[in-house]
Image (tube, rainbow, N blue to C red; front, side):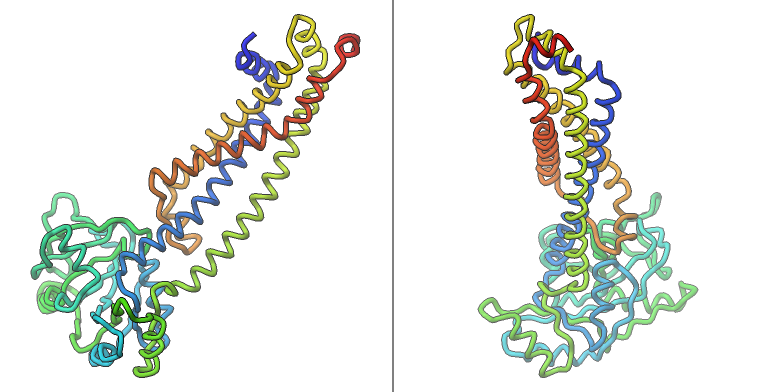
Length: 396
Protein backbone atom coordinates (compact mmCIF):
# COMPACT_ATOMS: atom_id res chain seq x y z
CA UNK A 1 0.00 0.00 0.00
CA UNK A 2 1.28 3.48 -0.83
CA UNK A 3 2.65 5.35 2.18
CA UNK A 4 0.61 8.56 1.77
CA UNK A 5 -2.55 6.57 0.99
CA UNK A 6 -2.13 4.58 4.20
CA UNK A 7 -1.52 7.78 6.20
CA UNK A 8 -4.68 9.37 4.77
CA UNK A 9 -6.68 6.24 5.56
CA UNK A 10 -5.44 6.32 9.16
CA UNK A 11 -6.35 10.02 9.42
CA UNK A 12 -9.90 9.36 8.20
CA UNK A 13 -10.23 6.34 10.44
CA UNK A 14 -9.28 8.31 13.57
CA UNK A 15 -11.54 11.32 13.10
CA UNK A 16 -11.53 12.76 16.62
CA UNK A 17 -7.79 12.41 17.13
CA UNK A 18 -7.01 13.82 13.69
CA UNK A 19 -9.34 16.80 14.13
CA UNK A 20 -7.84 17.54 17.55
CA UNK A 21 -4.29 17.58 16.19
CA UNK A 22 -5.38 19.58 13.14
CA UNK A 23 -7.05 22.26 15.29
CA UNK A 24 -4.13 22.50 17.71
CA UNK A 25 -1.64 22.99 14.87
CA UNK A 26 -4.01 25.42 13.15
CA UNK A 27 -4.39 27.54 16.28
CA UNK A 28 -0.72 27.62 17.20
CA UNK A 29 0.48 28.26 13.64
CA UNK A 30 -2.08 31.04 13.22
CA UNK A 31 -1.05 32.63 16.52
CA UNK A 32 2.63 32.40 15.60
CA UNK A 33 2.08 34.05 12.21
CA UNK A 34 -0.12 36.76 13.70
CA UNK A 35 2.45 37.78 16.29
CA UNK A 36 5.25 37.65 13.73
CA UNK A 37 3.31 39.73 11.21
CA UNK A 38 2.32 42.33 13.80
CA UNK A 39 5.94 42.94 14.83
CA UNK A 40 7.32 42.64 11.29
CA UNK A 41 4.56 44.89 9.94
CA UNK A 42 5.27 47.53 12.59
CA UNK A 43 8.99 47.53 11.81
CA UNK A 44 8.33 47.58 8.05
CA UNK A 45 5.95 50.50 8.56
CA UNK A 46 8.45 52.37 10.70
CA UNK A 47 11.24 51.92 8.15
CA UNK A 48 8.95 53.03 5.31
CA UNK A 49 7.84 56.10 7.27
CA UNK A 50 11.40 57.16 8.08
CA UNK A 51 12.41 56.67 4.46
CA UNK A 52 9.45 58.78 3.31
CA UNK A 53 10.31 61.44 5.90
CA UNK A 54 13.56 62.00 4.04
CA UNK A 55 15.39 64.08 6.67
CA UNK A 56 18.41 63.32 8.82
CA UNK A 57 17.19 65.49 11.70
CA UNK A 58 13.78 66.83 12.67
CA UNK A 59 13.91 70.08 14.67
CA UNK A 60 10.91 70.92 16.88
CA UNK A 61 10.19 73.35 19.74
CA UNK A 62 11.06 72.39 23.30
CA UNK A 63 8.45 70.01 24.72
CA UNK A 64 6.83 69.28 21.35
CA UNK A 65 8.74 66.13 20.43
CA UNK A 66 6.02 63.72 21.60
CA UNK A 67 3.31 65.70 19.77
CA UNK A 68 5.28 65.67 16.52
CA UNK A 69 6.11 61.97 16.79
CA UNK A 70 2.43 61.16 17.40
CA UNK A 71 1.39 63.29 14.44
CA UNK A 72 3.88 61.65 12.07
CA UNK A 73 3.36 58.14 13.40
CA UNK A 74 -0.42 57.97 13.79
CA UNK A 75 -1.65 61.08 11.94
CA UNK A 76 -3.12 62.59 15.12
CA UNK A 77 -3.94 66.32 15.16
CA UNK A 78 -1.40 68.54 16.85
CA UNK A 79 -0.53 72.23 17.18
CA UNK A 80 3.18 72.97 17.15
CA UNK A 81 4.50 76.46 16.48
CA UNK A 82 7.79 78.32 16.58
CA UNK A 83 9.15 81.51 14.99
CA UNK A 84 10.21 81.32 11.36
CA UNK A 85 13.59 82.91 12.13
CA UNK A 86 14.67 79.59 13.67
CA UNK A 87 15.21 78.37 10.11
CA UNK A 88 18.22 80.66 9.69
CA UNK A 89 19.58 79.72 13.10
CA UNK A 90 19.52 76.02 12.23
CA UNK A 91 20.87 76.64 8.71
CA UNK A 92 23.91 78.36 10.22
CA UNK A 93 24.96 75.31 12.24
CA UNK A 94 28.20 73.77 10.85
CA UNK A 95 27.50 70.53 8.97
CA UNK A 96 23.93 71.42 8.00
CA UNK A 97 23.58 71.08 4.23
CA UNK A 98 19.92 72.02 3.79
CA UNK A 99 16.91 73.05 5.87
CA UNK A 100 13.22 73.23 5.00
CA UNK A 101 10.23 74.18 7.16
CA UNK A 102 6.87 72.45 7.42
CA UNK A 103 3.60 73.77 8.87
CA UNK A 104 1.03 71.48 10.47
CA UNK A 105 -2.47 72.80 9.76
CA UNK A 106 -5.59 71.82 11.67
CA UNK A 107 -6.59 68.25 10.84
CA UNK A 108 -9.87 67.56 9.08
CA UNK A 109 -12.30 65.10 10.67
CA UNK A 110 -14.53 62.80 8.60
CA UNK A 111 -13.31 64.38 5.37
CA UNK A 112 -14.96 62.93 2.22
CA UNK A 113 -11.52 62.72 0.59
CA UNK A 114 -9.84 60.57 3.26
CA UNK A 115 -10.48 56.88 3.93
CA UNK A 116 -9.91 57.27 7.69
CA UNK A 117 -11.55 59.60 10.19
CA UNK A 118 -8.72 62.14 10.47
CA UNK A 119 -6.81 63.82 7.66
CA UNK A 120 -3.54 65.51 8.56
CA UNK A 121 -2.62 68.62 6.51
CA UNK A 122 1.05 69.54 6.04
CA UNK A 123 2.33 72.63 4.24
CA UNK A 124 5.85 72.66 2.79
CA UNK A 125 8.09 75.26 1.15
CA UNK A 126 8.92 74.22 -2.45
CA UNK A 127 11.86 76.64 -2.62
CA UNK A 128 13.80 74.74 0.07
CA UNK A 129 12.11 71.32 0.23
CA UNK A 130 14.20 68.18 -0.20
CA UNK A 131 11.80 65.57 1.24
CA UNK A 132 8.81 65.65 -1.15
CA UNK A 133 10.58 67.12 -4.19
CA UNK A 134 12.41 63.88 -5.16
CA UNK A 135 9.06 62.03 -5.22
CA UNK A 136 7.47 64.81 -7.27
CA UNK A 137 10.34 64.85 -9.76
CA UNK A 138 10.19 61.09 -10.15
CA UNK A 139 6.41 60.80 -10.51
CA UNK A 140 5.33 64.15 -11.98
CA UNK A 141 8.54 65.48 -13.46
CA UNK A 142 7.92 68.84 -11.76
CA UNK A 143 6.81 70.51 -8.55
CA UNK A 144 3.27 71.35 -7.52
CA UNK A 145 1.54 74.38 -9.01
CA UNK A 146 -0.89 76.52 -7.02
CA UNK A 147 -4.03 74.52 -6.30
CA UNK A 148 -2.29 71.15 -6.69
CA UNK A 149 -1.72 68.66 -3.85
CA UNK A 150 -0.44 65.15 -3.25
CA UNK A 151 -1.49 62.76 -0.52
CA UNK A 152 -0.83 59.56 1.32
CA UNK A 153 -2.44 56.32 0.28
CA UNK A 154 -5.69 57.11 2.17
CA UNK A 155 -6.29 60.36 0.28
CA UNK A 156 -8.58 60.24 -2.77
CA UNK A 157 -10.91 62.35 -4.91
CA UNK A 158 -14.55 61.67 -3.91
CA UNK A 159 -16.54 59.68 -6.44
CA UNK A 160 -18.18 61.87 -9.04
CA UNK A 161 -15.93 64.84 -8.23
CA UNK A 162 -12.94 66.32 -10.05
CA UNK A 163 -11.33 68.06 -7.12
CA UNK A 164 -10.66 67.81 -3.42
CA UNK A 165 -12.58 70.58 -1.69
CA UNK A 166 -11.33 71.99 1.62
CA UNK A 167 -12.65 75.21 3.15
CA UNK A 168 -14.59 75.78 -0.06
CA UNK A 169 -11.37 75.70 -2.09
CA UNK A 170 -10.92 73.24 -4.97
CA UNK A 171 -7.58 71.44 -5.28
CA UNK A 172 -6.32 68.93 -7.82
CA UNK A 173 -4.92 65.69 -6.42
CA UNK A 174 -1.80 65.08 -8.53
CA UNK A 175 -0.73 61.78 -7.00
CA UNK A 176 -0.86 59.37 -4.11
CA UNK A 177 2.30 58.14 -2.41
CA UNK A 178 3.15 54.56 -1.55
CA UNK A 179 1.69 53.22 1.73
CA UNK A 180 3.86 53.44 4.84
CA UNK A 181 1.43 52.36 7.56
CA UNK A 182 2.15 55.63 9.43
CA UNK A 183 0.34 58.96 9.69
CA UNK A 184 1.86 59.91 6.32
CA UNK A 185 -0.79 57.70 4.68
CA UNK A 186 -3.54 60.05 5.84
CA UNK A 187 -1.65 63.27 5.16
CA UNK A 188 -2.43 65.85 2.48
CA UNK A 189 0.64 67.80 1.34
CA UNK A 190 0.40 71.24 -0.27
CA UNK A 191 2.79 74.06 -1.10
CA UNK A 192 2.77 77.27 0.92
CA UNK A 193 1.21 79.37 -1.88
CA UNK A 194 -1.71 76.90 -2.10
CA UNK A 195 -2.26 77.07 1.65
CA UNK A 196 -2.21 80.86 1.63
CA UNK A 197 -4.64 80.97 -1.30
CA UNK A 198 -6.97 78.52 0.46
CA UNK A 199 -6.85 80.58 3.66
CA UNK A 200 -7.71 83.74 1.70
CA UNK A 201 -10.58 81.98 -0.08
CA UNK A 202 -11.99 80.53 3.15
CA UNK A 203 -13.02 84.02 4.32
CA UNK A 204 -15.87 84.00 1.80
CA UNK A 205 -16.27 80.31 0.81
CA UNK A 206 -16.15 78.43 4.11
CA UNK A 207 -18.16 78.36 7.32
CA UNK A 208 -14.90 78.36 9.28
CA UNK A 209 -12.00 80.58 8.27
CA UNK A 210 -8.61 78.93 7.84
CA UNK A 211 -5.70 80.88 9.25
CA UNK A 212 -2.17 80.36 7.94
CA UNK A 213 0.55 82.51 9.46
CA UNK A 214 3.62 82.48 7.19
CA UNK A 215 5.77 83.83 10.02
CA UNK A 216 5.46 80.67 12.16
CA UNK A 217 6.35 77.08 11.38
CA UNK A 218 5.90 73.68 13.03
CA UNK A 219 9.09 71.77 12.25
CA UNK A 220 12.38 72.16 10.43
CA UNK A 221 13.62 69.30 8.28
CA UNK A 222 17.42 69.11 8.27
CA UNK A 223 19.74 67.41 5.81
CA UNK A 224 23.27 66.86 7.10
CA UNK A 225 26.31 66.89 4.84
CA UNK A 226 27.43 63.37 3.94
CA UNK A 227 30.86 63.63 5.59
CA UNK A 228 29.51 65.08 8.87
CA UNK A 229 28.43 63.15 11.97
CA UNK A 230 24.66 63.58 12.37
CA UNK A 231 24.72 63.14 16.13
CA UNK A 232 27.23 65.97 16.58
CA UNK A 233 25.12 68.26 14.43
CA UNK A 234 22.03 67.43 16.50
CA UNK A 235 23.91 68.26 19.72
CA UNK A 236 25.11 71.55 18.26
CA UNK A 237 21.58 72.50 17.17
CA UNK A 238 20.31 71.94 20.69
CA UNK A 239 23.20 73.92 22.18
CA UNK A 240 22.96 76.93 19.85
CA UNK A 241 19.18 77.23 19.40
CA UNK A 242 17.54 75.64 22.48
CA UNK A 243 15.39 73.63 20.08
CA UNK A 244 14.97 69.85 20.17
CA UNK A 245 16.84 68.03 17.38
CA UNK A 246 15.53 64.50 16.80
CA UNK A 247 17.77 62.27 14.69
CA UNK A 248 15.85 60.07 12.26
CA UNK A 249 17.17 56.75 13.66
CA UNK A 250 16.07 57.90 17.14
CA UNK A 251 12.66 59.11 16.02
CA UNK A 252 9.71 57.27 17.58
CA UNK A 253 11.89 56.11 20.50
CA UNK A 254 8.91 55.45 22.80
CA UNK A 255 7.26 53.41 20.10
CA UNK A 256 10.43 51.41 19.51
CA UNK A 257 10.60 50.53 23.22
CA UNK A 258 6.94 49.51 23.16
CA UNK A 259 7.50 47.40 20.06
CA UNK A 260 10.52 45.63 21.59
CA UNK A 261 8.52 44.88 24.73
CA UNK A 262 5.70 43.42 22.65
CA UNK A 263 8.19 41.43 20.62
CA UNK A 264 9.69 39.70 23.66
CA UNK A 265 6.28 39.23 25.25
CA UNK A 266 4.85 37.65 22.11
CA UNK A 267 7.96 35.53 21.69
CA UNK A 268 7.75 34.16 25.25
CA UNK A 269 4.03 33.39 24.93
CA UNK A 270 4.56 31.74 21.54
CA UNK A 271 7.35 29.50 22.83
CA UNK A 272 5.25 28.40 25.82
CA UNK A 273 2.12 27.77 23.74
CA UNK A 274 4.10 25.91 21.07
CA UNK A 275 5.89 23.73 23.63
CA UNK A 276 2.63 22.81 25.41
CA UNK A 277 0.94 22.07 22.09
CA UNK A 278 3.73 19.77 20.96
CA UNK A 279 3.66 17.87 24.26
CA UNK A 280 -0.09 17.38 23.91
CA UNK A 281 0.31 16.21 20.33
CA UNK A 282 2.99 13.75 21.45
CA UNK A 283 0.63 12.38 24.13
CA UNK A 284 -2.17 12.01 21.56
CA UNK A 285 0.11 10.08 19.22
CA UNK A 286 1.29 7.90 22.11
CA UNK A 287 -2.31 7.03 22.98
CA UNK A 288 -3.01 6.33 19.33
CA UNK A 289 0.08 4.10 19.14
CA UNK A 290 -1.24 1.92 21.99
CA UNK A 291 -4.60 1.59 20.21
CA UNK A 292 -3.00 0.65 16.90
CA UNK A 293 -0.50 -1.95 18.03
CA UNK A 294 -2.53 -4.84 16.60
CA UNK A 295 -3.26 -2.94 13.37
CA UNK A 296 0.44 -2.37 12.76
CA UNK A 297 1.21 -5.98 13.67
CA UNK A 298 -1.19 -7.13 10.93
CA UNK A 299 0.64 -4.90 8.45
CA UNK A 300 3.93 -6.44 9.55
CA UNK A 301 2.40 -9.91 9.09
CA UNK A 302 1.47 -9.18 5.47
CA UNK A 303 4.95 -7.96 4.60
CA UNK A 304 5.31 -4.36 5.82
CA UNK A 305 8.80 -3.56 7.12
CA UNK A 306 9.65 -1.79 10.36
CA UNK A 307 10.82 1.18 8.32
CA UNK A 308 7.48 1.33 6.48
CA UNK A 309 5.54 1.38 9.79
CA UNK A 310 7.85 4.09 11.15
CA UNK A 311 7.49 6.26 8.06
CA UNK A 312 3.71 5.81 7.88
CA UNK A 313 3.22 7.27 11.37
CA UNK A 314 5.53 10.19 10.63
CA UNK A 315 3.80 10.78 7.29
CA UNK A 316 0.47 10.91 9.08
CA UNK A 317 1.85 13.49 11.50
CA UNK A 318 3.36 15.55 8.67
CA UNK A 319 0.09 15.59 6.71
CA UNK A 320 -1.89 16.74 9.75
CA UNK A 321 0.72 19.40 10.45
CA UNK A 322 0.69 20.57 6.82
CA UNK A 323 -3.09 20.86 6.70
CA UNK A 324 -3.37 22.56 10.09
CA UNK A 325 -0.52 24.99 9.44
CA UNK A 326 -1.78 26.04 6.01
CA UNK A 327 -5.31 26.55 7.32
CA UNK A 328 -4.17 28.41 10.44
CA UNK A 329 -1.77 30.69 8.60
CA UNK A 330 -4.29 31.43 5.84
CA UNK A 331 -7.04 32.35 8.34
CA UNK A 332 -4.61 34.45 10.40
CA UNK A 333 -3.27 36.31 7.35
CA UNK A 334 -6.76 37.02 6.00
CA UNK A 335 -8.01 38.24 9.38
CA UNK A 336 -4.94 40.40 9.96
CA UNK A 337 -5.19 41.97 6.50
CA UNK A 338 -8.91 42.64 6.92
CA UNK A 339 -8.66 44.16 10.39
CA UNK A 340 -5.17 45.69 10.15
CA UNK A 341 -6.41 49.24 10.76
CA UNK A 342 -8.38 48.17 13.83
CA UNK A 343 -5.40 46.24 15.18
CA UNK A 344 -3.04 49.17 14.60
CA UNK A 345 -5.45 51.50 16.37
CA UNK A 346 -5.95 49.21 19.37
CA UNK A 347 -2.22 48.57 19.78
CA UNK A 348 -1.44 52.24 19.07
CA UNK A 349 1.24 51.34 16.56
CA UNK A 350 1.52 51.66 12.79
CA UNK A 351 1.18 48.55 10.69
CA UNK A 352 2.02 47.85 7.07
CA UNK A 353 1.33 44.40 5.65
CA UNK A 354 4.65 42.90 4.44
CA UNK A 355 5.39 42.53 0.76
CA UNK A 356 4.35 39.37 -1.08
CA UNK A 357 7.88 37.87 -1.11
CA UNK A 358 8.25 38.52 2.64
CA UNK A 359 4.85 37.00 3.35
CA UNK A 360 5.64 33.92 1.24
CA UNK A 361 8.84 33.50 3.25
CA UNK A 362 6.97 33.75 6.57
CA UNK A 363 4.26 31.39 5.28
CA UNK A 364 6.82 28.79 4.21
CA UNK A 365 8.76 29.10 7.47
CA UNK A 366 5.57 28.64 9.51
CA UNK A 367 4.52 25.54 7.58
CA UNK A 368 8.01 24.05 7.80
CA UNK A 369 8.20 24.71 11.55
CA UNK A 370 4.80 23.06 12.08
CA UNK A 371 5.74 19.96 10.07
CA UNK A 372 9.10 19.56 11.82
CA UNK A 373 7.63 20.10 15.31
CA UNK A 374 4.66 17.74 14.90
CA UNK A 375 6.83 15.11 13.25
CA UNK A 376 9.26 15.27 16.17
CA UNK A 377 6.32 14.92 18.59
CA UNK A 378 5.33 11.72 16.80
CA UNK A 379 8.87 10.36 16.67
CA UNK A 380 8.77 8.34 19.92
CA UNK A 381 5.33 6.73 19.24
CA UNK A 382 6.44 5.91 15.68
CA UNK A 383 9.62 4.28 16.97
CA UNK A 384 7.68 2.20 19.52
CA UNK A 385 5.21 0.96 16.92
CA UNK A 386 7.90 0.02 14.42
CA UNK A 387 9.98 -1.90 17.00
CA UNK A 388 7.20 -3.85 18.74
CA UNK A 389 7.45 -7.62 18.75
CA UNK A 390 5.07 -9.05 16.15
CA UNK A 391 3.98 -12.15 18.15
CA UNK A 392 3.25 -10.17 21.34
CA UNK A 393 1.27 -7.51 19.50
CA UNK A 394 -0.85 -10.11 17.66
CA UNK A 395 -1.85 -11.77 20.96
CA UNK A 396 -3.02 -8.45 22.52
